[in-house]
Image 1 (cartoon, one colour):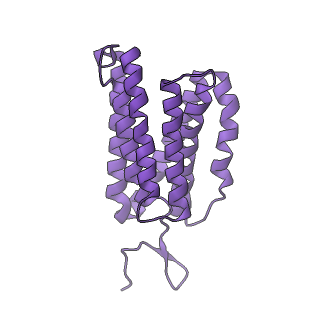
Image 2 (cartoon, one colour; image 1 turned 180 degrees about the vertical axis):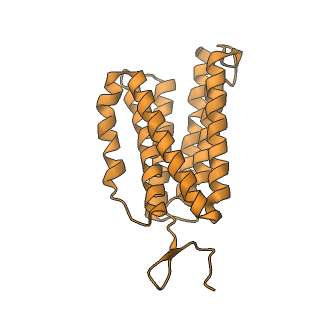
Image 3 (cartoon, rainbow, N blue to C red; image 1 turned 120 degrees about the horizontal axis):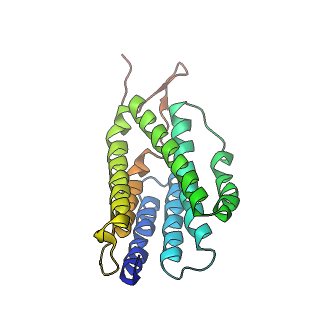
Amino acid sequence: MGGIGQQAAAVTSLAFVVAGLAVVAGRRRDAPTVTYGLLVVAVGVGSLIQHGPDPPWQGYAHDIPIATVLAYIAVDAASDRFGRRMSPGWWLVVPLLMIPVVAAGPTASTIVQALLAAVAVGLCLERARVRPELRRTTIVAAVLVASGALLGAVGDRTSICRPDCLLPGHALWHVLAAAGLWRLAPTIGRPRARQRDGGTRSPGETGR
């Protein structure tokens, strides 16, 4: 990516910061939502470090927050889907595990992030399958992120990412991915309501 492209990517990294702060400032200020919002902010800061000053440790600043927020989404979705609160250790351990992965090189880090993304998306879609009231939000978020990933991949291989392009594919990826993470926020930390008989039900469900 050329000079102008890097500048665009650095600027659009702030989309994650804005999205994360919007989540934190939203109407639901419970602990899971705030944690999620701060993790999204961290993704933006790490991306800005990579595309801006680009220090020797930029890989850690960029990749670790992404892996962590993906793990957080996966753990939250799994806890909700299976009706069992999972220990925060499942996602808190990810930053530590990513240190040697990032040190191994970008290929290893990319593979691990892709696996985490697949697990997170799969669990979110499975939760949406059994909770209709979350379906639309989840699908819109998934479409935004998938569109961003597609544009980013195409942009990296076509003239969309030429050095003199004001808005390269990677910059578009930042904006759409940030929008997707923001859109997903209403589903985070939103467990199903418990019925009197000990079962669970979605907030929109009523007894017969």
